[in-house]
Length: 205
Ligand SMILES: [Ca+2]
Ligand SMILES: [Ca+2]
Image 1 (cartoon, rainbow, N blue to C red):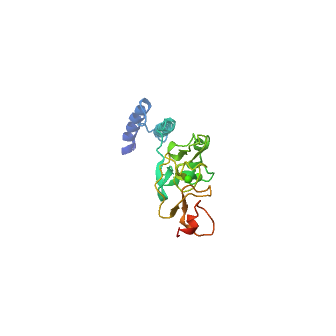
Image 2 (cartoon, helix red, strand yellow):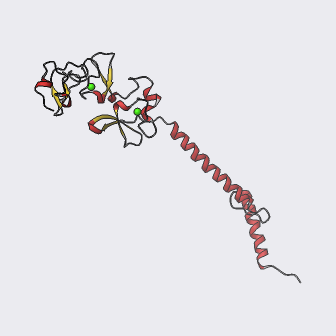
Image 3 (tube, helix red, strand yellow):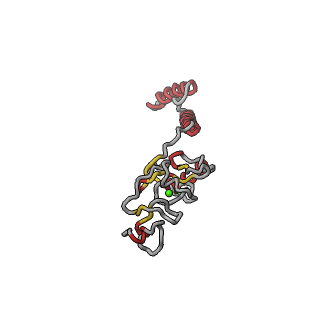
């Protein structure tokens, strides 16, 4: 008595055709004893190809020359600033290359930026004093302090500073720290700051 398994003949025929086609092509064969070896091999090869393509794309993108990033921004108190990589954080100009990381990833202290000051800095961060050998950060221009040493960051036409604000007293100072305005908090503090004593005689805080 021969028993014929209803699925066996069909299965053999099916396996046979799939196996032969699997050897001809790829990812179609599934041998009964091989446990879908060809299919697994083909799928693995495909996965490797996809992975390799993804890696190659990433590498190509990394090697592409990047367009210069616009770092200009306005920091608090309307100061000229440096825009961090997050495109949100705006660091005041004088915080760049001060050896303190202020951007999340420290891009304000990178060697590329700080290696050859001031030439390595973006131009908008630098103010050149009337003395060609001196420079200050852009946010030190018109801040009331004599950072250039010759007041060219405060009074000269190069700086084009607005008149003293309401928190300042306009006079001719004697302290080299200031140029043409002194903070009103220094008025009537018992110390002469203005050449004509106006900070002690006329100014009210
Ligand atoms: Ca810094
Ligand atoms: Ca200044």
